[in-house]
Structures are given as structure tokens and as C-alpha cells.
Length: 341
Image 1 (tube, rainbow, N blue to C red):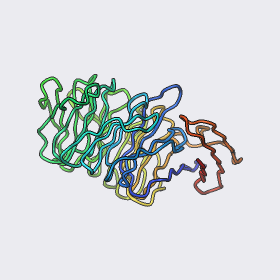
Image 2: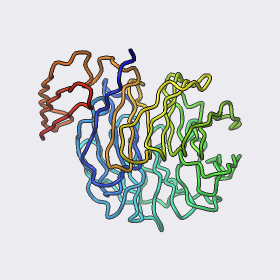
Image 3: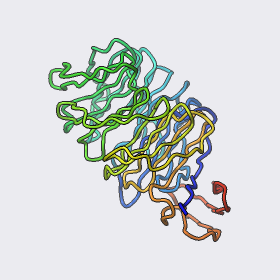
């Protein structure tokens, strides 16, 4: 009999959670940041979902959030017409970067020296994080709001997805458009694969995969709902997607075979992302929660255990934050995660 998927529910947000981003693995650990319409982006331990801290300072819904590779810095973009740079170790605000409209996307360059933002101004700004007083570079060309912007090709290119139903590739030396993909519907999600060679695109009822060089589409699969988000596992074995119908769908990457479908959220899914080690994936929803799911169900990992024996964990210091965690798996229902800080 197939094992049942038990998710870990991460509470704390009070409004829809719209975006998630994992850091890379540093000293055997990795971290997760969430963007939420409550205006309070949160940092969590990646393997367990344990809350570490909340970045306080925005005065509007937060639409985008990112961690740099080693999780030393965070960036957020919000409806208060600003992007903010944070020290992810102590939570302090390092800089507030003004914009003229809502900031929907933030992303670090590979070496963490630059930050790109995408906004409802229909343009992207590139900030030099070593010279925050300098004017950012600006890239124009889209005819509608920008949803996502990412560095590519050793930070020599940018790729952006917009409500104008295009994905565009840009050269950072000339600040000119190199190539574009046109869609019949808005590209809702854009993700770069772990090896930085493939793009995952969610649009309408499909998930497509494109090579970075040439943007050639190599695979496309249909999904029985409007897809808002999709993520490819680091080993490219499976991808997970979801959207309008509250359901998570898991498919084999090679041939599109559906491996599983299940519900857990009580609202549409806005973002799904695999962890950097591929052991789990996180989902964010209109219901205001983040949920963690096992890639291999039943495997001992993080707070998941093979047995049904209650586990009590005392964590004396989690990045400097004292915490006690109690974990009690219950038969046939989602586990309860109780935390006191």
C-alpha cells in the first residue's frame, strides 16, 4: 500500500503567502524565506520549517523575497514602492531602495554583489550592493508589470517574465533584449533549475521547460488546472506544480507520468519550490500557510520519522534564537508542530 503524504504546516502569517525562496546549503543547513500580503516576510529553518525571525519594516504587502546563496542577506519587494535589503543573521535592515510602483520580484546575483528588482513600472532595476548610493541600472522593454526577474549565465544575462505574456532575455552589458518567448497567457511562474541550465515556466494549464541557451522548449506537459507555480527537483527526476484547484500535482520529468496528486491547502497555491538538497518541497497558499512535503514519502528527514513515537527536541540555539520544539505525529491526520520561542 502506498504511503500517505504527511505535510508539515508552518503557521505565523495572517494573509496569503505569495512567494518562497530557499538559500543554498551552508554548513549543512539551508533556510527558507516567505513573502506575504501581511507585510511581514519570515525566515525559517529549511529542513523543519521552524520560525527563525520576521523582517519588520515594510508598510504594505510583500510580493517578492530572496535569500543569497549563504543566507547571510535577504531581500524583499513590496507594495509600499520599495525593495529592502536585510542582514539575515540579525534581521536588521541594511537599505531601503525606493521605486515608483509596487515591487513584485527581487533576486540576488550569484556572487551577491547585485540585486535585480522587477516592478509594476514595467522595468527592472539592477542595484550594486557594494555601492548602494549609486543609481541603479534600468532595463526597459516590457509593456506590462514584471512578475519575475532572474540572473543567468554567470550574471551576464537577465531573464524576466511579465504580464505582457512574454519572457525576455537581456544582455547586461548592452542592457538590450536578446530574445523573447511569447505565450497565449501570462507566464505565472519562472524558475531556474539547480544546475542553471533549464527554465521551468508555468502558464495557463501547462508547465514547460526551456534550455537557457536559445530558450528552446524541450518539454511541455498539460495539467488539469490553471497552473500558478511549478518547481523542478534538483536532480531533474520530478516536478511539482499547483494552482487554482488547491491541488498539488507531482509528475515524472522525463515523460510527464503523473506520480501523485493530493490536497493540503485550503486555497489556491501561489508558489512551490524544492529545497536545495531535493529532500522536500515547500508550498505557499492563499490560505496563509506554508507546507513542507517529502519528496520520498516515509524517509527519515528533518521532523519526519518512520515510527509513530513522539519526539521532543530541545534546540538551545538556532542561529542565535532559543527554541523548544515538540513533535507528535498522529495517525491518519497531518502532524502537529508545536513551538515555543
